Amino acid sequence: MAIVYDHSCLMSVLRNTSGQEMFFGFIPAHGRRLANAEEISVFGNILEAINRGDRFGNRHMNALLDALDRGDITIVSTPAPILFDETNQTSHILQIDGGNVEIADVCWEVSLSEN
Image 1 (cartoon, rainbow, N blue to C red):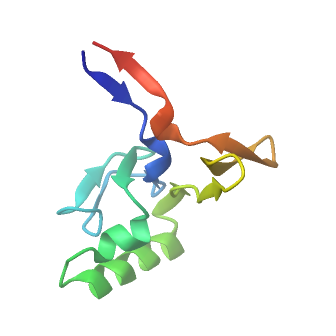
Image 2 (cartoon, rainbow, N blue to C red; image 1 turned 30 degrees about the horizontal axis):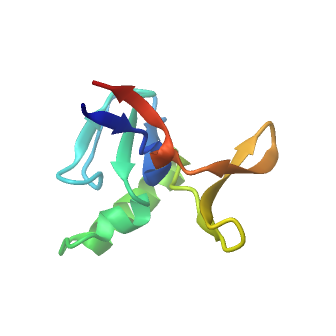
């Protein structure tokens, strides 16, 4: 039986806020065309993902910063900090719920389905 786990807390989410369909060349791996208000998930922190092993890292970082400045794209979320509790020997993440910062279980311990 294969068990599928949630990995959402390890992803960055970007949203096209330009008001139109646009191509964003800096989105790994080779750019992506997003409809207005469409979101895309990228593994890891988007700032690190843009520079990951690519000779165009600086150009892509500047393109992201320019798109943010113009309001063409929004960073909805980046991976939450993962903290280890030495006393309980457990890992947790920080999350915001209703404006309150809370400690939550890590996402990869949550089973999404069993086959």
